[in-house]
Image (cartoon, rainbow, N blue to C red):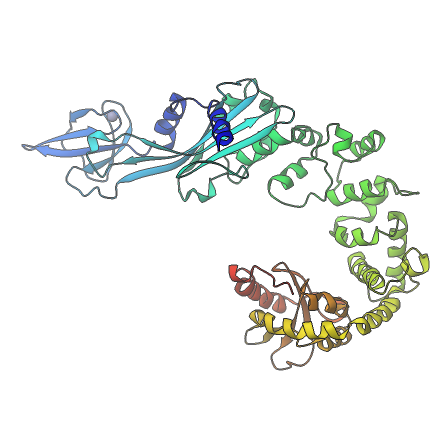
Length: 509
Ligand SMILES: [Zn+2]
């Protein structure tokens, strides 16, 4: 307890003792600029006005009207006119404000930010209205080695937050502001000045997330400047970074998980390089005949799509060059797979079959079968027979648990498989590899659901896989994609069944 208090005291030393003039001016002149009123009343037939901004009382020209606007003759503010006698019960303005300053004790290396809820409440005596400031969060961003970001949040008392986060979205305020000028002034002369913050527009423009990331990983700056801005954005907004970046590394080539030479090659070939291509380049550097950056770029084009998950399985056993050659050849041989991604999905599934069957994937003949389609059919049926009685029993239990996903509209239904045979049958009829998932389905690691036409409830139609309450794939005959109609139905299902909190937890069996 004592250590916590000490830490809190240390933290607070960075902050000014009282609300600084900068915040007050910002709130008065910008954030709550519209919260200026002239209250009018008549005394013995003469109209008087009172300005809530400059607190002056004056005689009007006599014709100010309730709810119109006018300029205060003293302070020249634009004010809304309110009748003295009207009910002011709900007349109150509020806003959420974030304001940056330099740290009081380390002004050259640290910046602070404070979040306030501010109010002007006119329900009482309008001549005594003061702007109220309720501090809701305090942030400290320290540069250095290592730098760090700290946040205290007001929950009754002040408490250190587990992770530094913005309160912008949850402030439930329609008027949310952050002073960009305060940021510029605070970072002036500190390392944060070079953070490239203004190159990363934020959906909640208080830049809390950005400065938290930058404090921890100053490499943000060089990544942005050299052209890897994508990864900074992805890291900020929880999108895929493909594990391309070693955020903690000190030297830049290590940040990009490359040797100095390879880093130079990447910097030269940056144009049009996407994150997956970069990752494949990184991953293949230790291969015996690694492909060049150009080769990777020309094979894994945009139209190939994101196949890194599938490739990750393949590259456990194969070099990238061999994998690419094999994919090229199989697309020619197997008519079933017309695209690189369809082929890779099948190859990945085949490799997993081999793992299940404990086949030795270090043999080229097993890893690169002459005809992937035929060999995959064979392993699928072998895997099927491996599904033992125990998993059959588990399957029955799962079928019960999964009734919560049952769903239908006028044309389609979704239901869980009743037993393992049904999954195997589904795979056979639709000529895809769902049978391979039967075991993980039984164990609750994944969830298989059937989409059927309402008037043909017994015929396999589409098969859906759900993991962690998200649809990971929906496949029809020979791995075909959904028709627009089916897609609409699936979207409806998603909205109804997968967004509710109650379904969030997958039942592990
Ligand atoms: Zn005034």
